[in-house]
Length: 159
Image 1 (cartoon, helix red, strand yellow):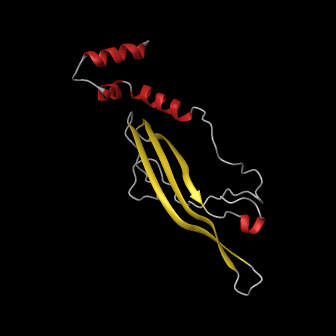
Image 2 (image 1 turned 120 degrees about the vertical axis):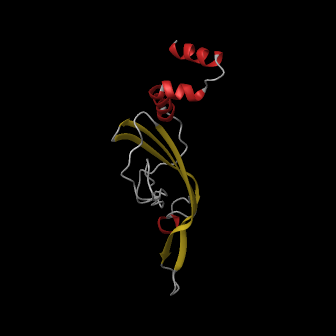
Image 3 (image 1 turned 60 degrees about the horizontal axis):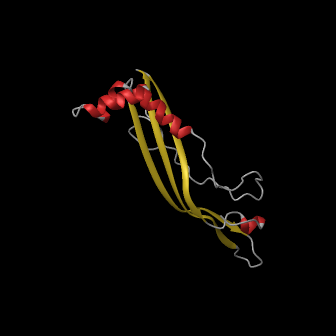
């Protein structure tokens, strides 16, 4: 009911808007965002239970940090201001990040692209709890990848 009253108040005045909502109810906006982010979804990924024959390979070693920073891969020591929220998105593309050299009957062997190409995205969210404390969440997602996986060694499925 409170959110309906807040929406009616915002719509009745033209000088306010989403900025006024964010200023008055930053906590409410953060909780709503987390509720949507953490709500259960149906995943369509395959099973990674059997490590010997699984095609699940993590080749992305770039782990971005949430919060103010001067470098992409090194987390900063600064925190976001109290009551403020921040968002970030980082996308990366990798070409042949994992190659396997497997023996063959010939003397030279063969090279397999276990992961031929991969597109990754990391969604980041932060909220300043106090002056020196922030809550940060980073959600890495692999949007697409291709390659032979471990099929050349295990005889399992491709990626």
